[in-house]
Length: 143
Image (cartoon, rainbow, N blue to C red; front, side, top):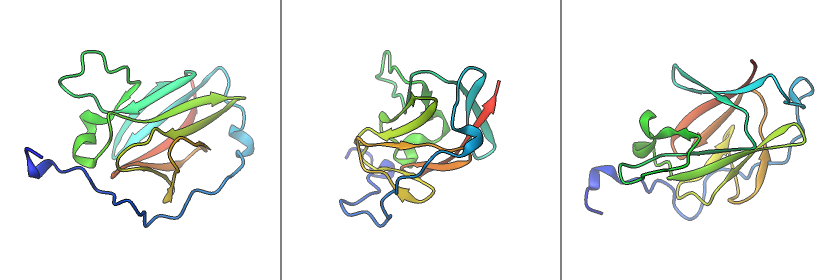
C-alpha cells in the first residue's frame, strides 16, 4: 500500500460479530409506501434520501467519473472508516426496506450483528447500521 496511514483493512477473515438473525418488521413501519423517506444520521448530520427501488451506499473516489451512488459516505469519513466504493444496497420489497452487503472488504452490521454478504436483511426504524467503522442510524420519516 502506498500510504500506510490510510490502511482501511479493518476486518480479518474471521469476524468477532455474531450473525444477524431474521426479524420481522415493526407494525407502524411495515409498509413504507408513498410519503415516506429514509433518514441516515452520521454523528449530528442528517441525510434525507428519497425511497427508490435501489439505494446504493458507498464512497466515491476522485477517479470515479460517474460513481452511480445514491449515498456517498466518502465525504463523511467513509474512506478513513473503511467503507467500500460500492458497500451496500438498500432495496424496497413489498413495502419494506432491505439492506444487502455487496461483498464489502470491511463488512456491514445492524445493531452489532454481522451481515452475511449478498443476503438481504430487513431494515427497521432506528436501526444502527455500521458500514465498516462508520456508524449511522436509519430512521423512517414521513415526507
